[in-house]
Length: 196
Image (tube, rainbow, N blue to C red; front, side, top):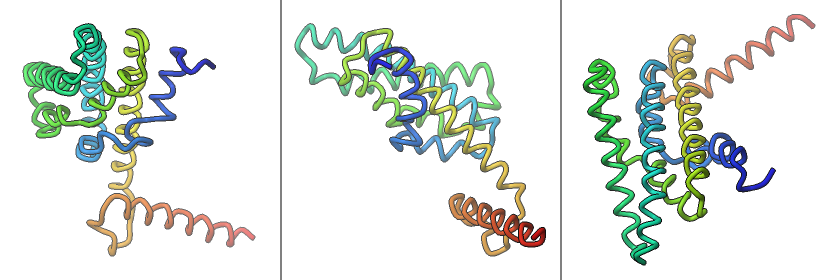
């Protein structure tokens, strides 16, 4: 598969170089909104929309900046575009779904400072992607963000239903995850020994 092919770019951003799971970008909304699937999915979609808009705008802005030899304005221009796209999403969500807008709380405007979105714009610029490649890269990165946030929300919802030792009640998610996995493995070992 060619490195700059559309499918390679999509799956690279979606799985291999997932912005959250591999590059650890965009962790604030990822951890803050992944408590329930009903808020995780809309946040993933909102982030994907902002990624797509900022990717398209970053491509166009970069063309203008290169033409006039003012590439030093790249970063501030990208930040302005991202902030504008987030404002658009925020206004639309407030109008169309006030309950969801309240549920997402402070994490919706924090998409503006989501380093995954700025990283996307900068990465595509430095990789010199054309317009189609930039759009596909944004869609792959957005799909990867949705995948990561949905997986974490599913895990957190499942942990809420799991019976954990009283010692771990109120502990952080990684601790609860490790204890739950260990308890499950220990129970399956005990069951295996009983059948022997």
